Length: 421
Image (cartoon, rainbow, N blue to C red):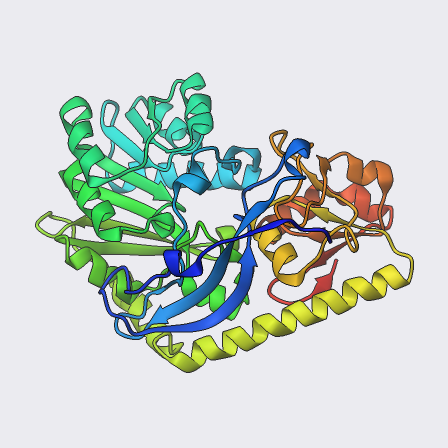
């Protein structure tokens, strides 16, 4: 593959201290190499230009046991023009609807109550609160997505969420009964600033509901492609307890969800509120202790398994190509781009990728420069195999592509282990 790279100064982005406890006891356990920002899809005109490559490796703090990236890339490079839109997935829309219904019922929300969403994307989650006549307000740095939300009637501010922004929002919008943040907290470098902003925005009896991939699931299911530049932190419960305590907040409930390969939904409230922790909090802490989440050996084993997955996938794809099989990709996802770059898979092994999102069609994958086409090309061409790179939506995709499979097409899935369906 002909890749024109811009080498970056790794030291410039190096994380020197843990973002929760400020310890320098950081143990690096997996390195995926240097690669472009995974959501940085390219236009045809950009193919001839050099791409910046950034280090992608993960470490664990051996003081508070937060897992985090060893290098921090400026958020402006990743989020100002963002191409991930959850509303294109039926799975995610159902998930958001259930999340909204749960919050409304659990905290007895009523018409006129204020609900805010940090990292609100195109307003998909807030739209379910808006249907129940609540006052909604979204905050998202991606101007293109904020505009989509406004077209839906969702009041949205396109900016990064900070404590200073929260101070500006309160006088205009008031305090929120519920603040949501789905797949956002893990993207934030200054977690203390985030918590202070949330604390300022919350009503004295308000609740902050945040959701993100769950570290024990990531480790046990070999979900290494969930590690990318946007995801700065990978959470288990104990580091979160440490974080929130520093800001007079505490976890009152925890729920596991199946999205994105295994996530958790955390409910957080002011310590001086009437909300008290459920038994679920201690149950999660005990379970993590049994899984030895605070053990270096757990992470060393994970690093070894990642290398095995890479070796097996490359060997299998080369074997199929030698047999004259046609292979394409399905789902131009960020995690897919991590997989492609880490395994050095380009058009030598995968001819193209199909994706349902119009924004991505006609573009090329970062680093590997594989062309992206509309989803209907899969059934028209009938390639022998499709490498499923959005494995977190595997059930939905396999149901959707039943005709392709009935005609003999097969999907290659890599997580949690290599298999063909």
